[in-house]
Amino acid sequence: DNRILSTIIHKFNGGPVGLNTIATAVGEESGTIEEVHEPFLIMEGYIHRTPRGREATPKAYKHLDTPLPGREGQLFE
Image 1 (cartoon, rainbow, N blue to C red):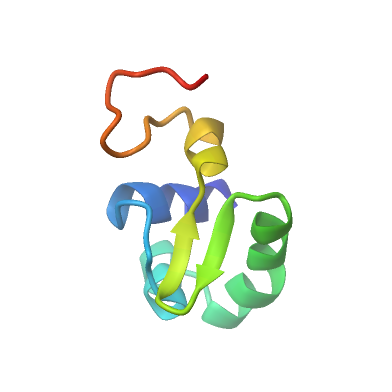
Image 2: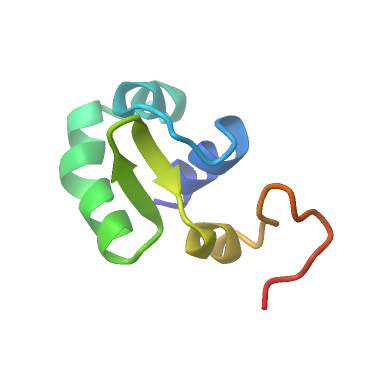
């Protein structure tokens, strides 16, 4: 799950990014991500599913100790 979050945040600037693109980037089947990983990540509030793709939430950035885009150098409150 952390690998998926990290990929969305670091490779795709937090999204939105499509499921197949995420799957290719992490070397996982898209069905596995959609059926196994994604429900947990959504339920815990780490990603949102939008019509344009998956997006990381501020909670995901905090979980990975990564500054939000446009807020480099600021600590989370």
